[in-house]
Length: 513
Ligand code: GAP
Image (cartoon, rainbow, N blue to C red; front, side):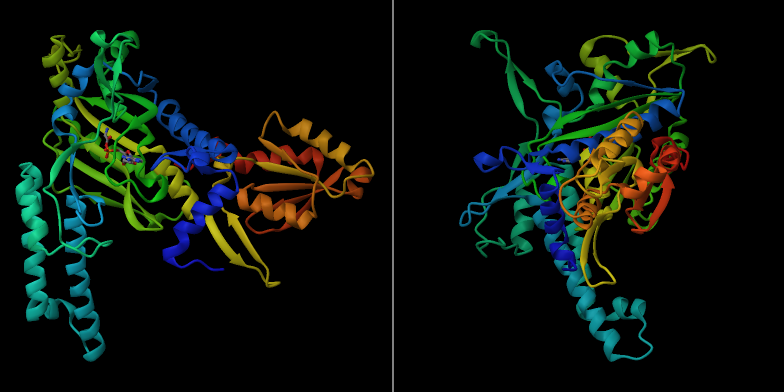
């Protein structure tokens, strides 16, 4: 039953469906590609992640406030932000399989294959020679040097083609790297075309009045265009931040890997407005602070790493990702970007309205610089779910699947389980539930053997099970079972609230940061 790396993601996907976390959207109509629905447990977990982020950003920082801007925005906003002209991915079709790919991803995969060849040469040589010197080997072995040269050339050509939007050069690179379609096995490619990732629709009920508008591809622009509204009405002083959680939409060419890359997803973004020249200090500050927020979840510090961007977008003067070790390897979880004054300046130009801040300390007006933190809520969900999911073989030889979710994020905090469906045990259990339900999300169940019920709670990550038995009726004590250790303690009903509260409160998680 132990999962290999290959089928781990598959097991997580089917577990998420079986236990009411995530369902494919429109499933009875065979689904809709890269769109998912959150079920009864998924919605709770997702809300708890949101609350963890929102409280950390807006409650623990007295200079950050939250807003909730509309998904529909004036179309010129997307012209000003650069999304109409430059929010593109290069796409290419294989004429035989009729499959569509991102051209840059095909090239990156081909480069990764060359790197694999180097790794294999190194591995072979390491087995052959005693006192093997890897650095010496890779700098002198003719075959390795040849592969490395090809990698360097391909990387440089990819960068040039992407930066100059030269799709002919991209096609030539695919041809020169002899990229074959994994399905048809042929090299029969169409030309490479730029594909804009924004979804559009029309506003206005009469065709002549119709006006093309976009579904926002990021929540950040809703913050930029409200910058002065919030600054003035909130009497905010620089440095200050505006946070927002909301839906974003991208018509991803290749959407795969479950909720990692979706067409409809949620972002949790914060724009931090600073004095020009101070942005690098704040960039470093947020890089560190955001990593600590992730690490406080206790999913393993070595599951996170920084990935600094070498090729910066035209508006950024520094950028990095916090990557997480997903079942498919280390991938971007959150982006931290120093976006200079690009967005506000551009909105000033396109709207004709001043978007400046008067700094009373320096007695001057300026357009603030912005440091952005941007994390995908669904990616956060996947990182937590995949780290929490564990298949275990127990001492008695049985199997158990447990979600070791951070207790504060678990959908249910406590399950109340009468041992039997008779002798007044359900009534006593309901009494306990009514005592606890104002403080914790509780779950009640009386069907099936107690062992089976424990396993079901393990599978949805409930940190505590309270079992009500005949002794409870005599002395007001219950069995408290802990999800992670499966240890059982006998405790008084009166103590339950305090014991549970200590470990499941969001405050206890936030205090760790
Ligand atoms: N405002 C900046 C911005 O949108 P981004 O790197 O394009 O930057 C930020 O996106 C985060 O949003 C990513 O780190 C990722 O967590 C999430 N994200 C982006 N595209 C996504 C998609 N198609 N599906 C799920 N999450 C996505």
